[in-house]
Each structure stands twice: as structure tokens, then as C-alpha cells.
Length: 139
Image (cartoon, rainbow, N blue to C red; front, side, top):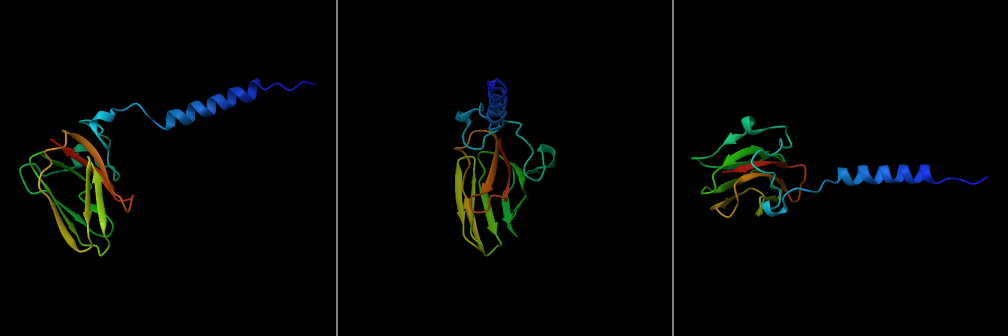
């Protein structure tokens, strides 16, 4: 009796196709790390544009407490800066939109301008604590 491998090959092809599709790809790499375009997805907490804090025209202060960013979704203008107030004793590192901002425990760090960041919606996270994440829109 001869064994046929047609069924096995078909199943393997299907599994590989699904796996590759799930890994993503496509996307616009020229938009920078974390860029999702002007109408990006909900952030880690499910917040979308309507649920985001609008810092345009004001002071953009992001508080870090109990291993969480607050707010987790916000909008700023490119001419603004960001202020991070870390109430945790642990150090954190904001990473997103091409920024890497180390923030020592119990400290305040200011980023003077976002003018080098293209307008769009970006995901961000803490490089040390990946569950700390959110969405930033730059206008």
C-alpha cells in the first residue's frame, strides 16, 4: 500500500499561509516606528480618538503611576513638548513615534518639541514594562 502525502502537503500549506497572514506585513515603513496613520487603532485600554485627552494648545503631561501611563491615549501638536512625571520608584522608558525617553524613578523629564515627528497616530510603550502602552496622535 502506497501512502499519499497530498493531504499533508495541503494542510501544511494552509497552516503556513494562515501563520504568515497573522504575522502581518504590508504597512508603511516610511511612516516610522509605531505609525498607524491618521486614524490608528484603539490603544491598549480600548480608547479611541473620542476617548483621548486633547493636549493641543495646552500642557501635555503624562503621569506614570503604578506601572501605567495616564492618559493612555492623547493628542498633541508637533510644536508641543511632553512632560513625563514618574511617581513610581522604578525607572521607565517611553518608546514610540521614534522617541526613546528614559525616565528615572520619582522624576520628571521634559521633551522640548515633537517637531521631528510626522503627523499621525503612534503606539507607544515602556521598553522595560511592555504592558504599559497607549496611543499618541501628533497633529
